[in-house]
Image (cartoon, rainbow, N blue to C red):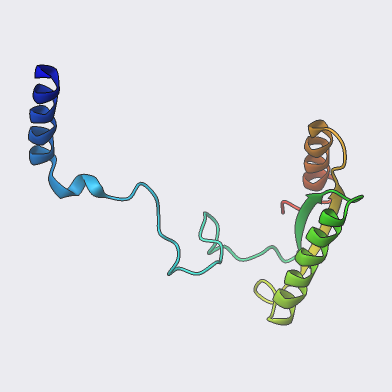
Length: 120
């Protein structure tokens, strides 16, 4: 019981020293900034050789859930392209199936980046 009382006093003293500034959120609230990309390079112009923004997508190909995932992404991309795309460039979905073990997904992500250039 005595240990609890000592701990409680120490906690109250610590809170009195720290005050309300310790209640700062450890994350950024992006709800008011919109859903666009805010990371590094956002202000850079796209390269002149870029004809479309390739979006890499991996997902199951042999299941209803995988087909629904792909259809949903393609619908969103059509809507984004109808709204003007990215700085006038259309988006293009590059799909790689990931049916199988986790190593299949890793290989497909590498292919998306290096063969399909979905990272550029």
